Length: 367
Image (cartoon, rainbow, N blue to C red):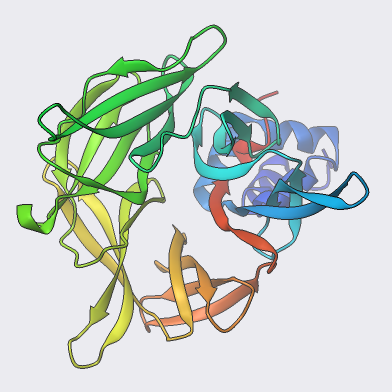
């Protein structure tokens, strides 16, 4: 390490560098590599800097076959917040979801019965299964990492009809490890009567799988969240979801907090479409806070929150537009109620798009 600058000063300066820059600085010298790989430095860096945002998306490519016909291949693209391609993982299937792993975010992809769990920091396939199957329209899947056992588990919720033609809710679990076998029956979810699961309705945070469902209007139309401990495979107490008048709610993880996103009209007379974002502030009391209400101009079809930025409470969002082919990244400022354009994303991405935040710990291992 250079002797002209004290080591503690170098450490202080580098701890404020962006994730991408810190990774590059590891190549400057042996001393800098040891410093940046030190667990204490990694912890300080995580507390001070914004994580690197990666947009994870499917892309289609035509591949020649037989000289006349072309088959289409789905690759996985990882892009940074500037829209530049960071990595391409070839022919891994359809993007399913992004969840947390022991060393950072992982991505689950599916093609037919094959499931791949991919480390987003390295592009390596961590686990594979050929037991997925389809399950039809009555099945909903979720995946997460169970600790301390260190296993990825897939949960499948199904609706079947009993002999009396009443809906019956069943649950199966698949452990992703060598020699683990196939699907296993487990305790049914604590749901009474018919329920409707929403698309994008399963999120895993800290080893707990959260499932958003709604009762039909005849039963009050209320929405709830059921919780499954992936390690013990035991259902926990259900909680009430926010009051919302929407048929398209979405549940996401926002800075480690469970969040529900839905679309509503702001004011009966103004008829202004908005995206409302609720954050779970107290799990025990089922308390939700409406943290953001983002106006949606007529040209924006979809707003998905990515993360609350470290300073100022600003919100980074992914937006789909009806008047342009390419999606955009925008930053919403709740203080003045405006969105600022951040970057254009490639227009050749498919509809399956996910997002993850990578801290320095996702790229380095202790020396």
